[in-house]
Amino acid sequence: MLEVARIRGGNPIKGSLRASGSKNSALPILAAALLTHETVTLHNVPNLSDVRFMVEILKHQGAKVENPQKGTWTITAEEITHRTPYDLVRKMRASVCLLGALVGRLRQAEMALPGGCVIGIRPIDLHLKGLESLNCIVEVESGVVKVNAQQARGENVFMGGPMGSTVTGTANIIMAATLTPGITKIESAALEPEISDLCILLNKMGAKISGYGTPLITIEGVEKLYGCEHTIISDRIETGTYLVAAAITGGDLTVTHCNPNHLTVFLEKLKEVGVKVETGEDFIRVSGQPTEAVEIITEPYPGFPTDLQAQFMALQLIVPGRSTFTEKIYPSRFMHAAELQRMGAEIAIEGSTAAVYGDRPLSGAPVMASDLRASAALILAALAAKGETWVQRLYHLDRGYEQFEERLRNLGADIERLPSSAMPKGFAED
Image 1 (cartoon, helix red, strand yellow):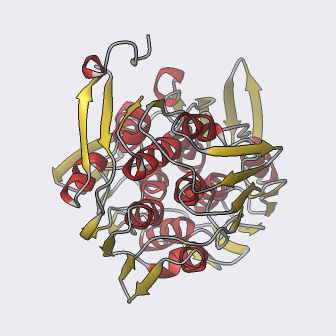
Image 2 (cartoon, rainbow, N blue to C red):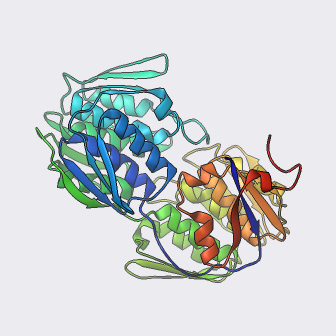
């Protein structure tokens, strides 16, 4: 059943919220559990549709996967297959992380090209070139990637691309290299905390990985990996989204069990727009509303996250002046702009830059999410708009936010999830 969110704006977001586990960390880490015959126990795993998709794929591969309590999963992959069909991977682009795990464990993989959010071109060329650098034989035929890694060996692998380092590509090569003979050095490796989290897990399993968190990661191949227990890091993108929810409504919110060091540039931009920011070892508090226009340029970590661009654009709608957003990761990632315009926003897009002319009256309207972060941005704008907003295609939201509308409601928002049939006549999509 299709569902929608109905939001009535005007209520400040206030209170305290515990950060969830990181989606972008959990997905490759779940895949990494295939690298061993033994049981891997994971804690702080978020309850998201993407996680459930990944679990279904792991089960198809032959793993035994259990969920003994909320946030905890155990994966035992005694015997697995190297083939992953399209009907599973089409739902989620992060399923490509299985490629490195299968290559590492089985020395072969056969996978349909994955699906996921439609936010621009996301080639996996760098993943495949990286595997070829490890002396793997890679073929792509009829939308299926076939990898033969029988002769794989440690080599130097360059993971930089025109839009910066590839995060999932770096994860894939790390997983493939852990059980590959010799020493692999990944140059222009992604610096994201999620990559470090993956490496910490793999080292617990017996891998020999050093240099994570820097552009040069070194992996010394080992013969076998073992089971372990690991707690997923907090989700910095979810944290940033809730902080924007507080700022756009002039609220006062504390997010706990998070790592402020993972959001340094984002928090600096919040301060720059006039929001009060307080941080501790594992919490972030924001209060007040933005007053200043800013320039945002998305960049690979530790730069401003592309996954928070849409949310920050919503925030700048209420600020006088002209703000600019330049996308250096996904130049066409502005599909949310047209829907924000339906609410009264004035946004001009030229190439990879969007100019936002703020302080225009926002009013509720029926809008449609195009991807995960766009869905969050539309809800954030609705929190600040007058009247009633209906956000359609909530399945995008469920890919990356756990009980988003319920948690916002607990913080003061007037929001509820309803069947699409509840929308006013003429609003719902066909």
